[in-house]
Length: 294
Ligand code: SF4
Ligand code: SF4
Image (tube, rainbow, N blue to C red):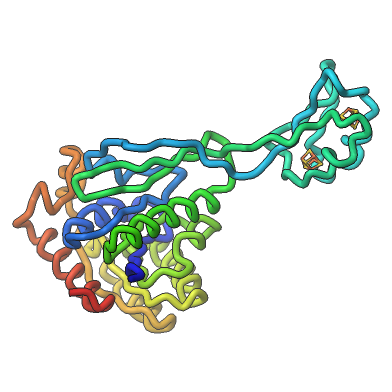
């Protein structure tokens, strides 16, 4: 059985996406979680995490010159289109951050002085949490390839769900609309966009909806901090309709989310009888209906 996959994204940071993801997670009894915000993973802050597995993620290869074998002819530096090979007092060296791993220099060096090394861009982790298994990751500072790392985390999460017959994969997606977000939403069953009624929230919502429509994933919108600026509600509903999406609910600006986070809990655990918790339960029930889950 293929699991359903609910991906929660926001377009921009600071909308409360992660707090909402943590709270919604409690409404689905059986799921595997993925934190795909690999640049700044923070779901673990509200889920009491114990890491059970941790490993480096290989993102590709990088060239490395062996100074013992190099004859300083400069042929490789001339061929490298990415200007990744530089000459210094120590001789020719590869700038690993600039190397695109095309392998041209490795093949061209007449003295076989260039090695082809595995490159690692970050760590991936499997953890046990108060809400079940969580896969998450962190990019090394300055590392790229976050889209690949996101795809890897999603794959791990899906595999766990398939292997164990778990019906839902719940993904906390990265902010923005770049490569990591595309890697998060392709092939998803359903997207929930958490937005806020501000000029930047509206602008980013529009961009995210373009993306969701392109990938033809059914999309629902939760307006968080809805009382900040009510004049945006109608605009957001119109924008949703234009892209075939639906506003599924709204939450007021609430200090309970940060209070819960300070306790290392979701708002459902910390304040289970609050109106915020009630609203989130209703939204989760609607999402279950949309995914035809019991
Ligand atoms: S082509 Fe080979 S020998 Fe020539 S500078 Fe580059 S690494 Fe050194
Ligand atoms: S592998 Fe390609 S990009 Fe990297 S240093 Fe060699 S020629 Fe340049």
